[in-house]
Image 1 (cartoon, helix red, strand yellow):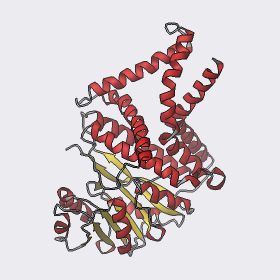
Image 2: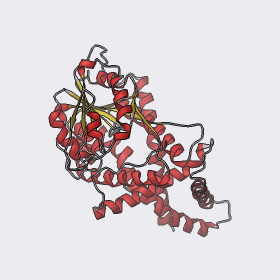
Image 3: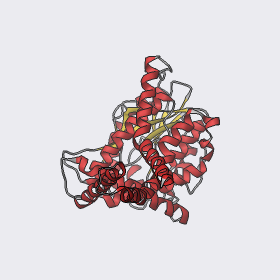
Image 4: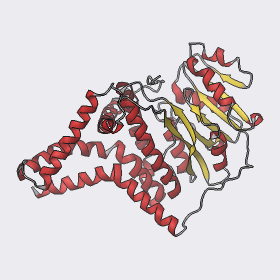
Length: 396
């Protein structure tokens, strides 16, 4: 029984550290560094205005072209220094023809559909500017986003800059909108602290930029192009910085089914990325970057979901051995665990009902997140995840 107890506390520590502990530890480290004025803030130079390319890889995005182009042309950056490139491989809904009506936009199209990473690899050959900024067709960018991203590149140590992904939040939301919105707010806070400590560990595909010279051809079966591209820049000794005021905004997934589909793909891609970036696990070589990478990413995509599964029968055994209706520690934790899953079940019941009490959906969204990792693992092992666009339906 003692072995079970030790195992329980190890599993619980991993779970708490992954989702709460790392954030607390990160906050304390940042506060100490600020108190002793350790580290330097990124160099910001408002006069630094190199020529940049806004790169949009798109598949059948006709419905978003007008809004995306209007948004892009209104960005606060010198028009003569902002090149806009669309790569529309495989699109057959008229997207390329519609884009060609804009004289200040370059369109590169192939009839063959080779997935987003295929379009990115091909399209990078047409980028001639020192900085390339990647963005999705269905997201709107904050007016100052390009300028704020470019400012961070004034520091030669910065090789990649990640913008913030924002979810349009309504006064009342269904489970997918409420859960996704709250999740990204927490993620944004962690990214801000990660950047202040040393480097963000992965960029958001909705908006991120790299020095063009640092782009390396990515394997054609890659699922998380943004994650692989940005982390390989960090592997080369540069930092990934972050500005929450450089943001891309979009609506949440239409429902939890669509969100689960998206999360499974991300999880399969995350496991693939861990395998391909396994050298980053060497903390003796990469130091702080490895610590951040393991704490913020690797545990979420590997060990922690497994710990959650094992914890259910393990805590049940400990609680019943102690007396499940007693006031003992394991019995109390057993009922708290049961209450959590009842709350997740309640979230499922209320899934498509809008509510102002968005915290009701947190347990459900947390459950969906970890379920997606398990399903993503099996999808990765079966090699059944396609690299072709599988855009989730978004709320209106």
